[in-house]
Length: 527
Image 1 (cartoon, one colour):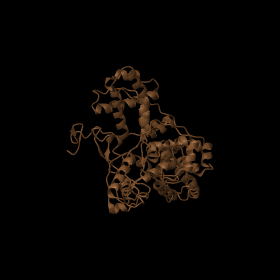
Image 2 (cartoon, rainbow, N blue to C red; image 1 turned 180 degrees about the horizontal axis):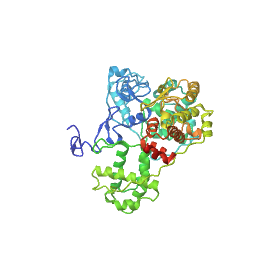
Image 3 (cartoon, rainbow, N blue to C red; image 1 turned 90 degrees about the horizontal axis):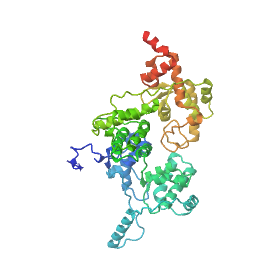
Image 4 (cartoon, one colour; image 1 turned 120 degrees about the vertical axis):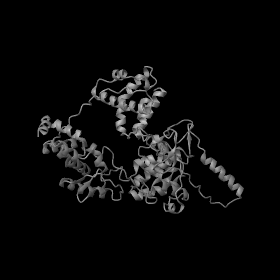
């Protein structure tokens, strides 16, 4: 009987949308189930830092560059003197301090240099300063400043944030091997933020992202890292998939939108209460939204206010004729109405009994050998290495991006699923060339990934999805298809061998097998 919500205790209503809990990473109180039990800052940490064991508390959570979890880092910030970087060793003596979620961490006021006055005057001054610091005057309207004036002021005016950020800026620059240009970019961005909002003690991530409109040379990613390390960042960034959902269903009736928000939340974050569901990839949710959004919008325009009014005949009449669009619309409606039925928001599932339309399999085709050879011998060592890994071993683009230096030992590559691949000799030769260039170009980088770029050398994240395929002029999927087709030809269509070798399902392996030769399946069955 510890907490009451909507007139019911937590035992009677544990699945309430307004049920509060503790963050699973930093243990801060005040998070909701729809955000997967994580606060704003821990959601950002989850996407930018690897999971490991904290060197101070030993918990298995996302770990920052210092080797500490966010709880230990926030605890060290609270006892650190103003203007100094947090000392994580203080956590061992001062202990950890829990806090409320999604609130900026309090900082100690700077010690006055003048002599102490009477206690009453000091108390009055401190109370006035605290009230002034807590007050934030919202802007009446937004006016974009002149970029030239903003850059000139950033070069001339004094910086009130210098004592809070310069130490961290120079520490990041030394640790990650920032160039002098990158360091100056971050310091200039911090000064611009102060000029745009001089009275603020904290800044929002959305304000940092808007710096690109005023300064095309602003390094917003590194600026966000510094502000977060200084404890003055409020991460209010909205995920892309959330903005996409809001844009598609913003004008729907309230009841219909509430039903869709429940479906969207369970698809993205999953559900631990029966009927349980695993979270789906945002790309899958996006394509299902693309399939059902036009139909639901038409239903709302026709006067329907709830998805409980939808019947099977209405769905069949609204499904598009094109096979690909019809397939994803059916998939979207199946998940939508099954979730609503499981939560007892509708009486019956109208998609029950509707057969799923085949999406129409694409035909994987081999690539011209001269094209592959040209990319294998590319002058860029990163392109040559990535192409050789996919061409010889059939890895996906995501697997190539996630390879770390420690995954390659004695010429063998260990994948996260446990498979160990002996690297081919051409791959080893290109690997040696790339490692030489990597060490020469970024000798002080701490990025653990095999592939790094100019954007990721000063961080710990993998390269972008287009690296290095955009410059190579060929896709990793096309190379992988060619490799699988070649293996099928060499093995005579052994489906199980293909599935085990490339980490795909038997149905996917059979797809390549059928496309290559329709008679192979019959011959295998006869044998």
